[in-house]
Length: 198
Image (tube, rainbow, N blue to C red; front, side, top):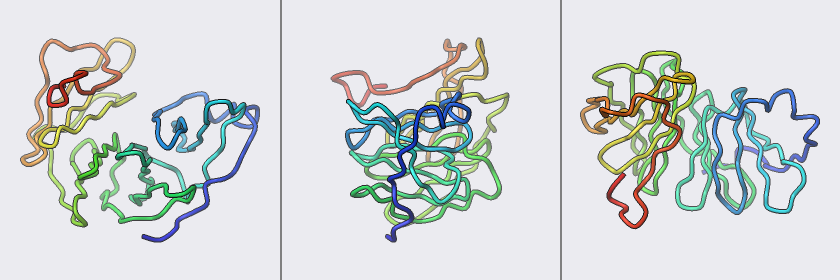
């Protein structure tokens, strides 16, 4: 891995107000709350801090996720990076094929980027691309991914009243709607005390 950029660039809340009105993703890692805006700006704040710290990334961030205790980012150019000792280290670059990333999912074993048409899976230093059986449609406002190891669940919010939950097989790319959940889904995760259930 090589260092991508330093992470320390404190800024005031007033200077961020215009670009930070719409938070796309929030994640807790390395004792900080990480906030990603729709414009691709990443910032973080720790308990007791008054102002957020803007993270100096090499370009707009498409999404952020947490593997273990480390935050990971995917740049709009497909570059994966991981925070280590306050520096972002560039890892591999995913071939996004010109598609916008809808969600990034991380576990200790693999990272999955999701576009409307494909899954891009990085595991063990190897990459593979899986075409979805049914493309994601509609005006996707927000996503909530959760990787079980064999299936990627993706909660969708397509506006105030629309959305749902997709179940995507990460081997075949077969995507199915989970019935009975037609409203916006803002989060997906394991049942407490039952890590195999979601």
